[in-house]
Image (cartoon, rainbow, N blue to C red):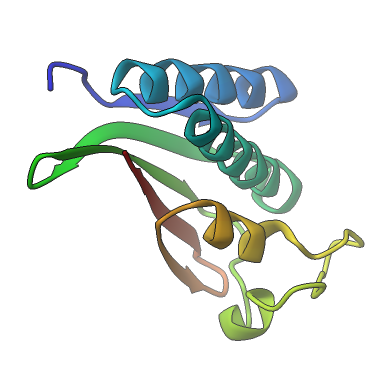
Length: 133
């Protein structure tokens, strides 16, 4: 693969929109199907919105990856925000500390093929997710 990683600093609605467009572009360039492109873009939208809402700023990193001969896209969303006190509870549908429907992180996990989350109170959160062709 000749694509390189893209890093988008998230600190505004405009940067959120840039992250979604960059995700679509990279996902299409590695050959993901249209429905897969939409799933990854939706996941990035949710992750970037969480950065804005809870941490005010952070970064979305997009990179092409491969597993044997299967290409994919890796998304890393990180911030130095308040962190998540109870990750297991946060991963339950309809749990929300921000007055939302509480489908964000569990939804991202369902949209992507691989999902990992690390969070420490007072230090921030890092989500790594992958979608394979």
